[in-house]
Image (cartoon, rainbow, N blue to C red; front, side, top):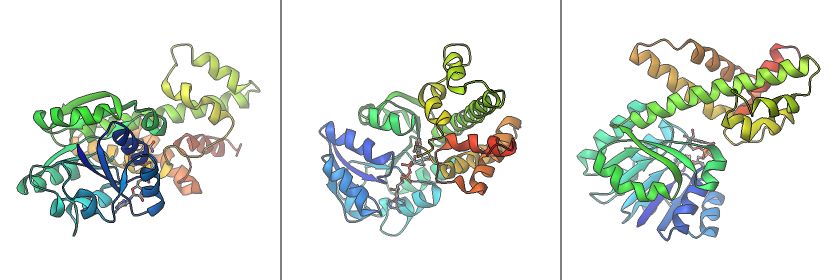
Length: 291
Ligand code: NAD
């Protein structure tokens, strides 16, 4: 397939590389030229603009930071909707607020462009290993058309509902991930505060009822205080905002999510926005006078 891929960051570059490795023609664009070079090294080709990436593409994939970038790239001047051919399929894999996904689908339909929201979970490791979980919102037939491409990037690929539903599921994913990071951080601070070796303690936790993927993947780096991203606190701050706004709109109360939202905001306010979200540990340390 002829694919235009826009947004070649931590996630986009390995995802686009998997599509190129699966013998698709991938033309990539990013505002950062070095990001495009990485795709070229992985078998894709370089586009000079969004319009250039989208020109003649059957499928356009976007993997951008947040809704303002998606609005600019998709709805803006020289954007996807101006440049894509009628009948093309736009798969937005960015994590953004559900209402933007719904709006994009509506505006795109007027131009005969089909849209799916398909945010992902699994982090940089999942993107590199093509083992992402992908939660897809949109029409059945568009999901069926996109599935073979999504299978080149992920393992668990589920159609969860209409436009925007993928983003709602992703918001739910992020509140769970944020909560687990906060609690693993608290477990480390508790054990160290009591003079117990936290690495050894977490090894036991990882084999019992407290076992989870974050303990598996991140316990060593957290105990060693290695916080290079991965997934940046700034992006998780965005995602907690999406979850809180969705909760407000749905008239539901999520007290734990509210607390975790504030802890992530504190991490950002302390200047840790560009660190990995496992740096939530630093907030607990600070609160405990152990920073
Ligand atoms: P990133 O910041 O590394 O990548 C985003 C890329 O988009 C950057 O290379 C940036 O230059 C590019 N970009 C921004 N504006 C652009 C524009 N107008 N035109 C073209 N390119 C533009 O972010 P990331 O970590 O790859 O995350 C991308 C999305 O995936 C986010 O919505 C994030 O929440 C989500 N996500 C990230 C992870 C993770 O672990 N990093 C995991 C799951 C989901």
